[in-house]
Image (cartoon, rainbow, N blue to C red):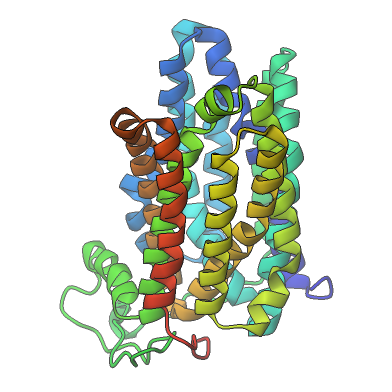
Length: 421
């Protein structure tokens, strides 16, 4: 892939962008708690980050399919840079509102940036085998960043250098915009009259949809294009199966994340520092899983990849959350990261392959909205389940829910994913 000029530029833009984002991801909660001393304010900051994807995600996907990908990538990165820069004035408790504004603007821009990037990858890397390599390489670089960048951002913020972290993130967004401006992207395929068509005659068990139909009444309206994104998913067996399995997986994952600190304190009888060990172990597992994901993508169908990956993650979670040993928990979460990374790369890869070029951004936005909704529901369900059944039972129940995601993938996904479009 290093000999592919278009992908090199796309990889550079995505990696520079991710570097600044991962630097800030833990720095913001640390800064909010430092200036307010309020856990509620910190939790609100996390909620604000997820809210735009829930409310705006599908609309952003429909608009992204209307506009040139390059324009969206450049514009979204610039908008995110402007949003993040607002954090520079959030230096005291009475200015914490600027944090929420900055996060809202940044994540609103991300609602356009993520589907545009997912739609750009198949446009730049047209060969399916090369696309597997591209997705694996992107996941590997992002996994490496998720290990070191949050730790660096947290350390700098704790040392009083939050402003420097913000500046680096702003520069990373602007650099990504400059790199994306030179991407060799083709124009979005549109149907006569400006309408974006609906798929017809979906083949049972196929991973792709046949030709788009002709223009239909009201097809140019944004609400119709929004509905088309959901219809593309519903009418494709592989997309519907991917969405159902992914939603269950990320709901359980978000709930377990919300209970991670109580698990460390009450089950492992350890300090908050142990959370860092678990997060780092998970990052190491993700890095290893990303590195081997290309081989997995090219050697087995989607159903096999996701069923086995979800099942292995579920088993690792059951071991992790039933132990009282920190060492066993770290080993188990590291092992969970490997199939977890494969599941993430496989989902992204098969969504790209199964979506028609004229609807890729909308489909990607549908998955982004589903993941964000899963994060909100999981975070809210976790404390309710603890109140009803207690912490140990809640942890085991949520770990077993990951096995339900594996069963869903095995039942809903076709045996073969079909040729990509």
